[in-house]
Image (tube, rainbow, N blue to C red; front, side):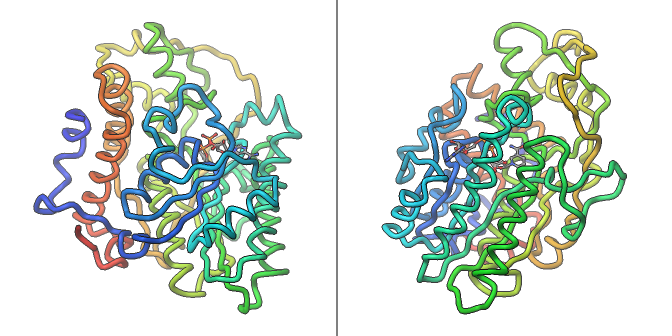
Length: 393
Ligand SMILES: NC(=O)c1ccc[n+]([C@@H]2O[C@H](COP(=O)([O-])OP(=O)(O)OC[C@H]3O[C@@H](n4cnc5c(N)ncnc54)[C@H](O)[C@@H]3O)[C@@H](O)[C@H]2O)c1
């Protein structure tokens, strides 16, 4: 906790008052999150609970052990249902019981390497699961805003240096990426066929983001997680593709985009059926080795040699740089990222170090980082805060 506050302390200047930029919109509302037992879903569930929403989670068991869901006791903060998104009747029963104002669909098989070992399950979950959620939403008879989370990997990566725009072609050379592009097509055709006419009470939109890091992720084959696991075991991490560049962003950045998108959908039909990119500023792009050097310093290593070994081993196709152009989110939602690259690393490193080495409470630290992020966004005049009147609690 102390580390985290020092990581962000210099950017917080809201006079000591807690700022809750989305509270006016989400306070007292019923919100369904699919995939709330996962990494991003757990952060989103805790953020929405902190905003005063009644959160109803629907997902399979946590995909990892340990998990943020278990460590931060997310089940105690939400109405928790274990279920498969491909089970239409079960998911529909939840919608009809809860009558949510918002639905955030995050449930997915989210790991690229697993999409090679189990391609059918990946496509089934990501494409049919999304289709079933869409189909259940057809039955809704009350105003509801639905945000579908896909990925920056849904774009046909032609390895150019420019940011991809929402109108660029969909594609995917690995099964995970292709499944996310296919999910986008399912969303698009369902919207045209069933939701577009304007007489349906559901409005929906898509959020695309990628390369998310942050405390509490335990998923396989993600570089930060691999580091933390190796360092906790007293070892070094094998580092392949050290020169690969990625636009890293903290998990709270795309989540603020999804929340801003949900709010916008509920308030106006302007962006119904549209897709939005949520990514970091171009200057946040770093190589994998730069990221590890910075994280290793934050962890307390005095030299990189203690932290990783560079090895040449590429078990599967890895795309080159894929950047997102986020002009549309700025213009339409007044959304911009809040954190610098350094702050993103500091928050991530401090979460793992605080919880794993210093015995901090995972729930308390996660909520503290959410509050610090909100306060920083308000202090920096982020447009998505002003849109909510900058509500202070
Ligand atoms: N983490 C990233 O870097 C990243 C980047 C881009 C997009 N995304 C997308 O964001 C979303 C969340 O990602 P994450 O990193 O939190 O993933 P995660 O693997 O941590 O969590 C996935 C969640 O989906 C649930 N789930 C999986 N299959 C299910 C099924 N058949 N029925 C019901 N629930 C099921 C899991 O139980 C879990 O709650 C996913 O849609 C993912 O594709 C993540």
